[in-house]
Length: 182
Ligand SMILES: C[S@@+](CC[C@H](N)C(=O)[O-])C[C@H]1O[C@@H](n2cnc3c(N)ncnc32)[C@H](O)[C@@H]1O
Image (cartoon, rainbow, N blue to C red; front, side, top):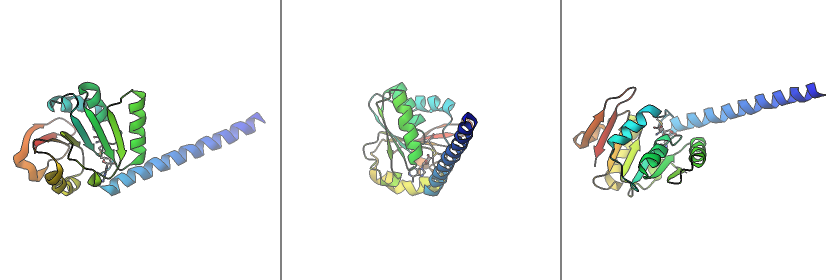
């Protein structure tokens, strides 16, 4: 009887694992289809990037395509900014919210949204790690909605058309980081 119970438990565990794996895989494919695959910023370079951003308490820090929200959480933890993480992938946002709750982070908010549909006018700092094509598509929105002087931090890829707005570059591995001021 006990052996039968263990047998069904093992089948249930395998099915649960397969289901979880399928959901996560589909959500990652979805992220890619929507514009950028999920590749997190390496934890060890986040502090270095945030240090260069001169963040001040209660600034509005927006992360476009926030993934698991690690950059937002670090920014609120170290600099007490108000962080808004936006991602189209519901699984990642659910995870980001869970981690924020576990850490007692009340200054990070995470929303499931396509970044093209989010009003950016209240941002003081924008962080992104997105594919070059998507960055290009976002530029008209940046031009229209971002306030003058907004700091835009692009990890991984240059904003080619904003070459005249480039203020700083960090050349760390595996990806460089570019700082622009609108
Ligand atoms: C390269 S990852 C960066 C994750 C996070 N910013 C980090 O640095 O750890 C890009 C993220 O953008 C999200 N994404 C892709 N297209 C999106 C869209 N149209 N709207 C919102 N988020 C999007 C993906 O789900 C993914 O989490």
